Image: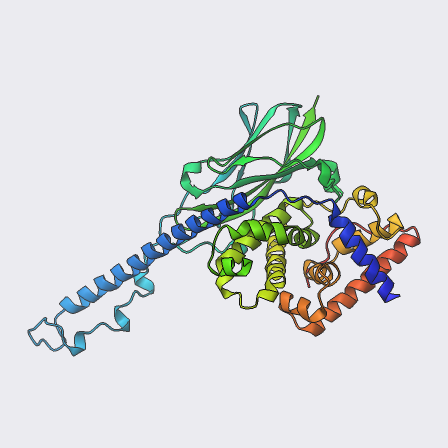
Length: 247
Length: 183
């Protein structure tokens, strides 16, 4: 009985992936790899800047410590065994390392026919990256202020729809991916037809995706953003807009 | 040859890896994340990780297992990351249209829905055990769990799928494709 079920599972799984076609190419992967290395370099630079800041504060403390008259008034300011840096010369709570200024909060814009109709800001946890450290995206996930398909727009079939990141210049890398536009009623039922999902090409350089409104009906546009800013802050998340395409 | 190229981090090896293992990685990833675009991302991520960590690969024979292990972990991570994004779930029409198979299309649909409804880690165990044909020990290593835990997860999965089949044959709805909580 169990063997039969196991065989059924094997067969069902094989059937399920039979029609899949692999569209990613080695060149695409090589490009991503190169991009990843650039990301890391940016993070390293951010980390280095933080390390330099720490060292600068420590040196400042050390200099102040060294220039102070020795206890008991010995009349000499030359370094002595008692004047060597110690734990007290490192930044304390009151002398914290200066935080890198909060960066701009990115936002995603939805434009139809040239007029902006939707706007979704990324959550406030973005911009808390300090000292070059990347924001822990796992922490961010719980704070996503998703507009859960609350914005509905009427769009004429064939109209040009654009989804883009506002202020793209604030980010070093702006991969904005439009994953799918799927019929809203199907996704609401938890059941969507992969074969009718639209794959939309996006410009990684400008953070913009442009596509033509699909056939009449209610669709959900789902934009997924994964951006890394110059301070090493990492943001990601999905946004859904509901559009009503009319003939 | 491929392993040697991986160890020396030659980017040209991506072509070979993609041709040899791309489809299988994609299939495993798809069965876990249930999204074609995400599955392709997992393929790319897996091969990039392989290129970056190639020098750590010791045993040439274990290349396939190593790649599928990376892919499984990437897929589970991606599944967590995109949990709030609109999901594309099982399409009974597509499953029914698949050629060959277990004969009874209702049963197949019920099984696929049942598998899609399993918590991601349990689903990953099912995929590795029954699609990749790995032993329980191999699944356990890939998932970072004890063999007993994986064995228990597989048993629980079989129980759930058996119940889904029974419901289907009794003409009852098998439930939605919503996922159960993580385990």
